[in-house]
Structures are given as structure tokens and as C-alpha cells.
Image (cartoon, rainbow, N blue to C red; front, top):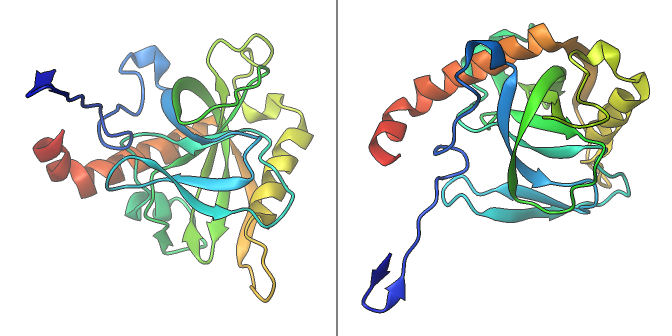
Length: 212
């Protein structure tokens, strides 16, 4: 659209303006994922919640790299309902639900939006807060596309994710309080997804109606 010689363009906010998943009954495991980081990134990127722009959170101190694409599922929020699914904590981290996506093809750019199907997750507890990491496969991936549950993945793939999240905040003099021991399958991951969607609408429903 042009106005006084200038061009204006609007796009949906990555968190609030995009849908979490397909509305088809047989595709409840298929989600939209907004990718913030790729395995090549040595800087921690994170969405700015107010503007929707991708920002530098911090340079990574360690040499450990992500073994999968990393981002979040739109219109999700880790609040009270997500916390209740973890019997070791009383609260969640207050962010969109994180997702890690495996694909045979190397994707080197972010931010991008893609579709993925959920196969499981890691119940990460970070400093006393639930911070689940959903694990998924790029939709129609020619190598991993047949996988429907995390039990079908090689254990080392999940171990590498656990190692990354156990170490990516390491810094001299900083005591970490992170637990990534619990790994769950697709059914549990879909429960976490639904809880995060319910948390989103409970906390941001009115905002969404007003702004989007």
C-alpha cells in the first residue's frame, strides 16, 4: 500500500498473529513453528515479544551447537496449565512453547516459518520453572518424515539435545539449576501443546482480539 509516496506493509506478529496448528481433526500433531535459530548459529537469537523482530539475546559462550532447528509454536504460552503437567515445579517460564525440529536437509536461515509434526518432547526444568522442549520432524522430510514417535528416533539424537540444553548457559561462577532427564512421547507432547494453547488464550485472549 502506498501513502504519500511511501510504502507500508504489515505482517502478522510471529507469536500472536499466526496459528499454532492445523484445524483438521487428523492433523492435531502438525504445528506451525517460527524458527529463531539453526544448528549453525553461535549466537542466541530470540523473538522480541513486543515487536516480533528477531533479536540477539547473547553470544553463546560454549562451543556446543544446536543439533536441530529451534524456535517456538505461535499462540502458545507456558503458564499455569503447563506447570501442572510437571510435578516437580509450581510455575512455568512464561514464554511461548519451544520446539526443536529435525530435518535431513540443512536449513541455514532464520527467521522462517515451517510446518512440523510432533513426535515427543523433553521436560526441561530451568531454575525451578517448566520449560518444555517439544521435539518434531519437518513435515514431508524425505528421511525423517516417517517417524511418528520419539521412540522411533536414535537415542543419540535426543541425548544431543539434552546435552545442549544442559550446557548452553554455562558461564564462569554461574551455578546452573537445569534438569533435562525426562523425555516423553507424542501423546504427552500433545498434552503439553494443548495446555500451552489453553494458557495462551487464558492470558492473551483479550489482547489477541484487540490487536490481531
